[in-house]
Length: 630
Image 1 (cartoon, rainbow, N blue to C red):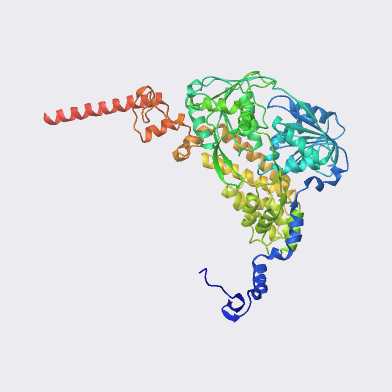
Image 2 (cartoon, helix red, strand yellow):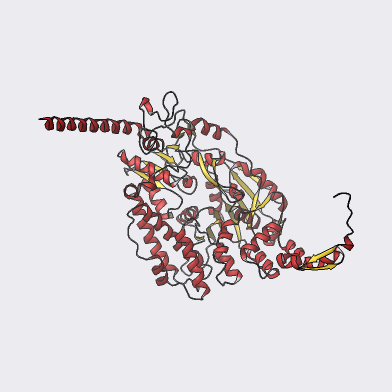
C-alpha cells in the first residue's frame, strides 16, 4: 500500500501479548534483552573477536621469533633421497627433532638413528620410548608431528611431507611446527609445489629459505597397456585399491589363481603392516604380489616393480566435511606411482599402469599435469583460546564454543581453520557427561575412528568412568574388550579386532594425558602387542576369512570407483555382452563379471557346465519317460 503512510510513533506496538501505544524505539531494550539470552556472545563480542583473531600465527611462538632460524627446503618427488639428506644433517647435529606424519615413519627414524649410534627417543600420541634407563631425554627425538615440542631448543629440526600443511584436518600441525620449532636449522622435506608458499610464510617471520632440488633416483615408466586380467600379474606387482571391499575381493581372486598375496590397508595395526610389507619384500617368500590401499603412499619401504591402479576414484572429505567421490589428484597419483621401483630395492626401475583399459589414458593425463601449487595452511583453536571463550560464555557447550570460535575467527588470506567436525562429533557424544572444560577438550582431540561403533561406545565409557573419578584399570579394560580374544573366523571378526586395537590405542593416548586415571599403560601395551600378532595371523589367512564371510560383504555392488571399464562390454559395446561375444544374463552373472568376482573365462566354463547339466537332466528325463511308456 504505497499511498498509505504510517505514523510509526502512533502505531500500537504489540509486545509479549500486551498492546501499548509507543514509539518503535521503545522495543529496543526488550529486543536486546531477548537477543542476549539467545546469543550471549553479543555482550562480549569485542573480547571474543580479540580471542579468535588468528591473523598473525607467527606471533604465537615468541621463543622461535627470538632466534634467527635457517630454513632449508629439500624438494623432490617420492624416492628422490630428499628425506635422506635432511636426516644426515639431523644425525650429525648435537640435538634434533624429526616430525613425521605417521607413527611408522617416526618409528623408522627412531630405529635408524639409534642403529647409527645416536641416542634418540620416540614420542607419538600413544607411546613414549626413552633410550636412557633413567628416563632422561636424549638429545634427539623422533615424533609424530602433533607431538613435537615448540618450547625445547634443538640444533636441527626435520619436518617431513610439508605439503600436508594444506590438509583439511591435520594441516595445523605442520603450520605449528614450521612457525614454532625452536631450532637453529629447520629442514623441510616435500613436494616442489610447496616451495613458493613456504617462502611466503617465512617472509612473515623474516627468515630466508634455501632450496635444494632433488631428481628421482630411479625412473618409472607409464606402460601403454592395462593389465586387464589378474591372470596377467607378475612378481613385484602391487594393486592399489581405494576401498577395503576391493581389497577383499581382489585378494580372494588372486588366491583362487594359486598365488599368494600380502594385504596392507589403513586400519591395520602398525605391526601387521610391517609384517605384511616384510613378507612381500622377502625374496625367499612365496608371496610376490601386494594388494593395498593408498596407505602405501607413505611410511613403508616396499620393493614394488609395477604399481597397478585398480581404480582412479577415491572417497574424499571436502571442506564442509562431507564425503564425496573424486578422481585422484596429480599429487596423490604421483605419491602412489612413485612407490614403483626404489633405489635401495631389487627393482631399480618402476612401471605404472591400470587394471582397466579405459582408466589408462585418464591416468596418463593425471600424471602429465603439474601439481597444483600449495596456497593455504591450516590453523586450529588451542585449549587456552577455547577456555577464554568459555569464561565469557559459561553456558555454551564445547561444540557450540568451537562453532562460535570458528564463525568469529579472522584469518589471513593464506590460512584456514581446519575441519573441526571430528572434534564436534566427540564433544556432542560426551556433552551429558560432567567433565571440566580442559579434560573435555583433551578427550575431544583424541584421534579415534568415528566410523567404528565399538570405538565410539568405548570412548563414551572411558569418559563416563573418568568423570566418576574411578581409574580405568587393566582389569576394567579387559572386561570391557572381553580379553582374551580368539583368532578371527571371518572378516567381521577381523574388523572387530582392528576396532579393539584402536580402543587400546585410545587408552594409551589418554594415559599420557591423564596418568593417574589410566594407570596400567605397560599391561595394556602388552595385550595390544598380543592383539597385533592375532591380527597378523588373521591377515595371513585373509582369503580364508573372506570365504567364510557372508557373501554380502564381498559382494562388490557398492564398489568404489566403478570405472566404465569395469562394465564388461562386447565388441560392439553393448552391455550385457561378455568378452568374445558370450551372451550373459544381465542380472547376477553380469554383476559378478563387472565387479571382478567372476572372470569371463570362468563364466564360459560355468556356462558349459550348466548346459552340460541341463543336457544330462534332459537325457535322464527322456530315459524316465521311455521307462514309463514300457
